[in-house]
Length: 71
Image (cartoon, rainbow, N blue to C red; front, top):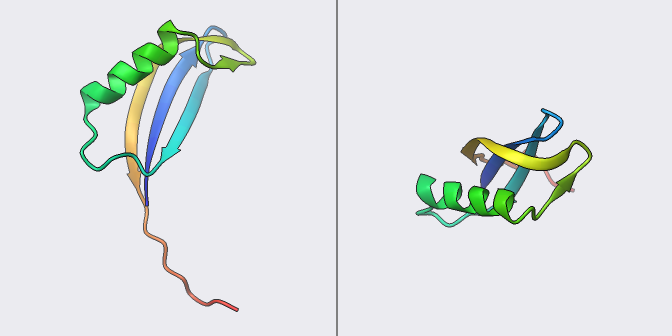
């Protein structure tokens, strides 16, 4: 399973992470940066530390699940 993790800095100086499961396979860095810019500009999310103020990083996480047993 792939997960897109976007990390922002809020007004309080803390990192805030949003994770989205199953992003499209051909997603690009410029697309993610554009979405993150929009999230900040439109103040879409509120956090306990205040508004999101900047982008920190974005990463694709690829995990593999292996069932060891099932009852």
